[in-house]
Image (tube, rainbow, N blue to C red; front, side, top):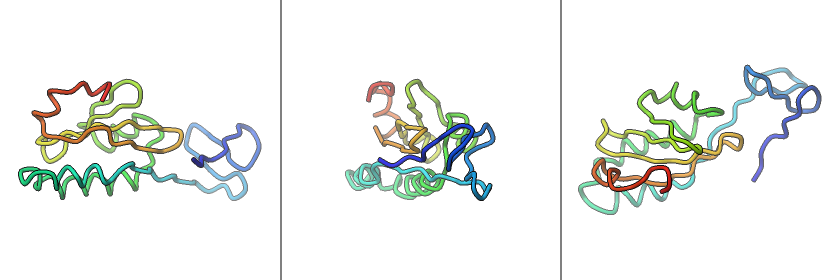
Length: 132
């Protein structure tokens, strides 16, 4: 898996408190999140007719997450204020007005989002979001 080489003080990439930038041209560089796997989301809304209403909200979440650059949990919270930040990179998103729940694990340095669970609010109540 590719990740930018971060060298403090010299080198091609430098990491600063204000973000990541290219040391040669000095402009900001944004990294997009990789969401794994969209198939899990699609299978959820195709699995049962009652989940069909989740299709558009989940597609919207996927588009926003794919375009985001979440380097920290605070960046996730800034974009999705109602998201619950758990330990070990876990985040719970409320989808479609809290009708559905989405649990992901985020690898912040590599900008990867792993979909761990998607389900109704009732299904979510039966799982442990820290271990699923």
